[in-house]
Length: 135
Image (cartoon, rainbow, N blue to C red):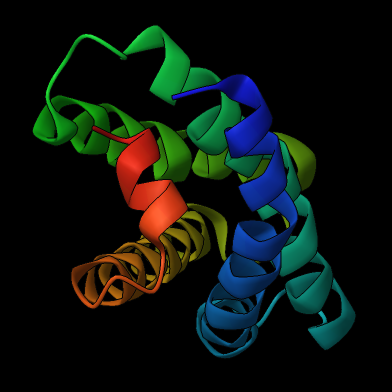
């Protein structure tokens, strides 16, 4: 896969991912976060990890199977997003560890939703470029 092809897909994939993940975060992040912060999290967290998933990992893992790429990407994205979110907002706000676990569960659920949607769209050939990028 050429890097230029991956760059062409990036804006479309980012927008779709934000559209899928942000509602999950808006509903599922702990109540200590304002609605504004929850919506911002959908844009910000994806902006931090999506370029790595779409631009970097396909090129690094080019000689590996699609399963290897998906494993690395789908562990990296939620783990990195949880780390970023906790680094930014910590355990404060009264909920402590329980809220932090809820936040990480929400972030992981949002990532699983977008992963599943990507797989369904890819199975129907609607994301042909991205499916080829992971091969």
